[in-house]
Length: 545
Image 1 (spheres, rainbow, N blue to C red):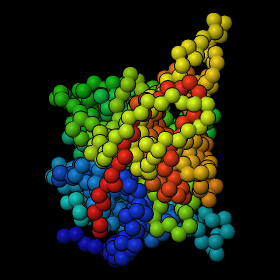
Image 2 (cartoon, rainbow, N blue to C red; image 1 turned 60 degrees about the horizontal axis):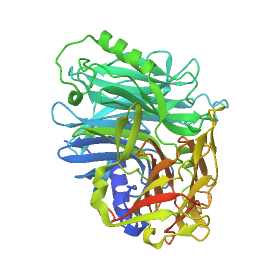
Image 3 (tube, helix red, strand yellow; image 1 turned 30 degrees about the horizontal axis):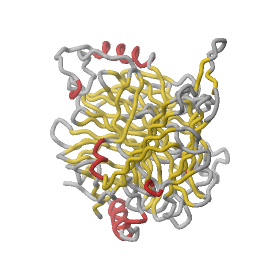
Image 4 (spheres, rainbow, N blue to C red; image 1 turned 180 degrees about the horizontal axis):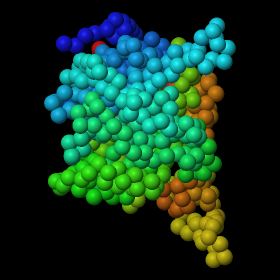
């Protein structure tokens, strides 16, 4: 029998009382926002009992991060979603916050969730001015449920300092990614902070029953090249290749192939034999028993040599999770920079959004992403234009909109770029030097996107997007020098997602204080030819609590 704690009951009463205060037009058109209050990491992204489940880190009581609960949505089609009552509150003596985790269908048919219990006790300076009497302890816990109600395991935590190797600290040990291998064992990848250098590492654990766990190996360590601590790991196999995605804290990087701050990086390994038992059940066909030692050595070797790449180089994308269904690997991320978490607009009733679901795929060795094809069900009209850009900026009434899916094929004049025999650098033989697009535009409010043909640099500038907060406003990424470029823009009331060259790169950003009337699209760049396809989008349906 599921017991509802006082804390969980209070959270549910609060969200029900205030959910109706947020009008539909105050929410994104086709992105998810919290029932009320604050949202951060996606959690428990899974398919169970004929529904997609997506949970989220949640503070119903305000628009800032605080004691973490879990919010919950379900969907039949990844487009239209139902809100449900909060699933978890920090109501056990080993937790002051229910941190991130994942969900799978267990062997007995229940919905199995594994999450981090964070226990934090502030220092008592009246007894110790050093503050060293404060406590922070992170452990891994499980809960089971039926898709609506969940019960935490009485034997929690299932992974604690007993299982964690001594070279790691309990203060930063979190965010399990859970799956069942073809060998029938449970596997989990977590992150932890190394004591010797305070850098992050990804750890692999296994269990026969999801309740008793053992440490297997450290599959990837941060050597200082990728920020400090890591968090929110996702580990999955795509086309037989292991992918470890990590949310990197405090990245210091000046390369246009990565970005600074808190960001997401994927490490892509070489193909692993389908005989390896650690592969998820859905991705393995051959039956052959392998020892755990073999699995550890195989995976550790592959991930040590895995190649890094950025997942999203925009302003706001963090803590992504994936799930596999019908041969597709689908990813959702928190569309917010953690460092901007305290910048909710004044008077906001909610703060935080999820990205639109993205399908992951490989093009060669490149991990690419594109909006799931289901978005076509939201199309309500289509506009096709061929445009010869002019020297001066020009807006196009046919392309106006606030909820849209806009695709551009950009072509510079032939021979715009020429190679110099004495140099590997490309130089511009004449005009144009750059293509410019402004979107979400009204007067002096707009987002600016430019592509420089000579340098191969794509720039997104939202410094004119009307935010009253001090946030990052310009991103520059290297996409390569070419006479051809494709861009795809998903624009919503409070965000944009930009995909470059059919998803080889992505840039996401929030737009919280732009006026509703900011709908214009303009282009500039003498001699540049555009093929434009624009679809206006209908709002998704969201079921009330």
